[in-house]
Amino acid sequence: LHQDTSYLAKDRPRYTMLMGIEIPTGQGNTIFSSGFNAYEKLPEEIKNKIKDATGIFSSAGPIAVTRLEREKDMGIKSSESMEAEHSIVKIVNNKKTLYVSPGHLIKIKNVEEKDSDFLKNYLIEHVNKEEFIFSYEWSKGDICLWDNLSILHMASEIKRCRRVMHRITIK
Image (cartoon, rainbow, N blue to C red; front, side, top):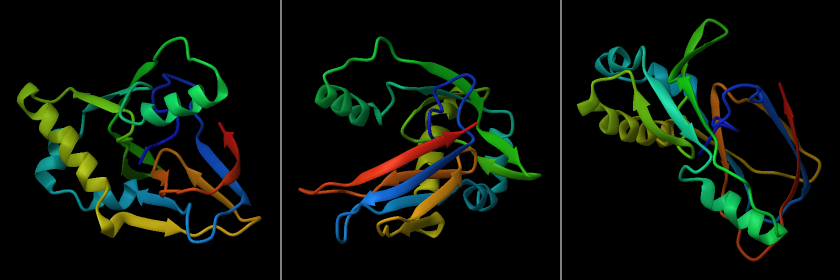
């Protein structure tokens, strides 16, 4: 799961929109997780520990494997990795949400040093819980729009077939 371009300090897209162009049968769903629901279900002790926490997000984070594979296929190479810091807890429409982007989060700051790795791993596991997950099954021509501050997403596994999507991001 990830939130698009969380490794950028500014000009991150607020919304992402996908349109299904070529959809493999029974594959290629988009998996979503709600940062709102995940925050709401956190124990109070964890909420208190992360209320002022800042995450360090990197384009060289765990999801970089996907980017590197795409670059290799296209015969290009990114010049450098990018890093940015953002609050772990965001307020969207007067409601708190988790902003953890497991694909890009590499460290949590502004917490006790002994808690940093534990909190990072705990929050990543937490947003991946089944109770926060929704799987969208695409059909050709479908359009789906989501808020990158409060919704995490990823494509489900795609084997030996083609999935073509058109993507637009909106600031």
